[in-house]
Amino acid sequence: MNAITSALWRREPQQSVRIVDAHAHSGPYSLFFIPEAGPDAMARVMERCGVAHAVVSSHLAIQLDATEGNAATAAVIDRAPDRFTGYLTVNPWQDPAGELARWGDDRRFGGIKLHPDLHDYPLTGRRYAPVWEFAQRTGCPVLTHTYDGSPYNDLPHLDAVAGDHPDAVILAGHSGATPLGFDLAVEVARRRPGVMLEVCGSFNTGADIATMVREVGADRVVYGSDFPFIDLRMSLGRVIFSGLTEEDRGAVLGGTMTRLLQWRSRLG
Image (tube, rainbow, N blue to C red; front, side, top):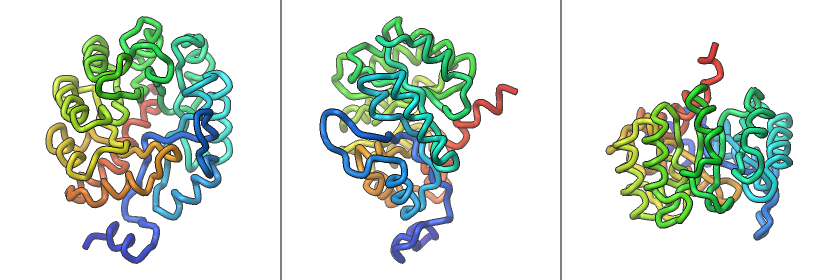
């Protein structure tokens, strides 16, 4: 038994690996109730589980109001900068270039978040052009929702965008979300070196995560939970007990995402 599983069996927070949650949110959601969705409650769960850091976007930003939602995300970071980094959410209908101009140089934000399904706009659409220009110029990672069969962010959309913007780092949120989507996401990642597979969702298993690592490498697979939309403990357990080597598990749980978040320091 290794250090991380040993701590779990003792019901203690693990301290052997720096875990970074690459896909989290905060705040209330308009379509249904999410209990304890604020940063304080989230931080308590993270502390209990040994999760060092999470990259968050507010639910307000991804759904209704990018401008006010990004301000809400920034406020979360101000409250606990050691615990959270922000995703700058870009809604294609709400002044993408303006949001990037307002927040792009703000160090509270470590990535960009796109949600084509919620915004009813295809990932391949021209309104996202400022995002891809910024991502290619800076190295800022872009997390996009993906879902097999979606008219807005299916895996062919991801493939096309990654092909058109080979220097962009793109995190495929949910890795296609379904068993077929996982296979298609792996195929895209094998063709497109800039695509990273993010593993949160309701349908994948530890075996699926192990397959992703085997097919594209641990340096291109990242742990995410969708917390508090989905409880991080479920997503975390799937990675911990997936049968990965300690080195690969450490990369998936936090090493790879930590590297991706260092893009600002690489700009000089």
